[in-house]
Length: 262
Ligand code: AMP
Image (cartoon, rainbow, N blue to C red; front, side):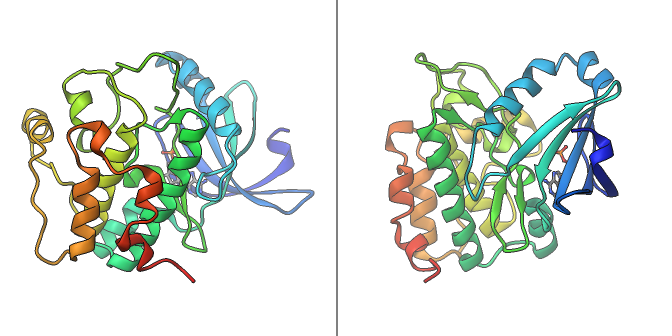
């Protein structure tokens, strides 16, 4: 594969290392997204290893709610990822536009996230960077987890690296303790809160203030939230990772069941 195999269309996004274009594979007519990463930038920022890991992990995942990495190639200038095209773009943009999502819509997205996270955890992968900016939406309103830049194969020992986005990191990471796949359960709780309210639960102007609130699990649930939505958020935002509601029970939760498509 090379760029010659594609009719490259308009730019649809800009990331840390390059641009994303919509493109059509010439022989099949298949529409994809091409993520063109500058090799020079990748080398300069010492990110080749992280990219290789991202590619290896994502190429082996097959799930309706995980963005498919269909292939990759490179020339002298660009490393190119061939990605499934998610026509409705970032969930974050939807959230900014509408302020907050209706409970039905949020419930369906959280259900899709729980399905996708169950799948990756079974494959011993933890995502570690769940947030609306990393989630894309396709034409059928299906969530696609898109960015595996921070994900890891869980080795036998637990992880201690500090990573992820401030608002979404769990208490055990704030405190530099070991963590495991249960960090994704916490992030799912933060996501659920943010989709329903438009802001992250521990948001503060400074990092230190945010960390403090996360460590104390200090958040308030606005009045407009339903009883079931509150119950799900409370059962995911548990300080003790072992007490967080497991994904199989998230999928059985009344707030998820209520809005499940027939
Ligand atoms: P990234 O470099 O992954 O942060 O991508 C930059 C932006 O390009 C994203 O925020 C999306 O808006 C867009 N984008 C990336 N990949 C896709 C895709 N597969 N389908 C549609 N839009 C995408």
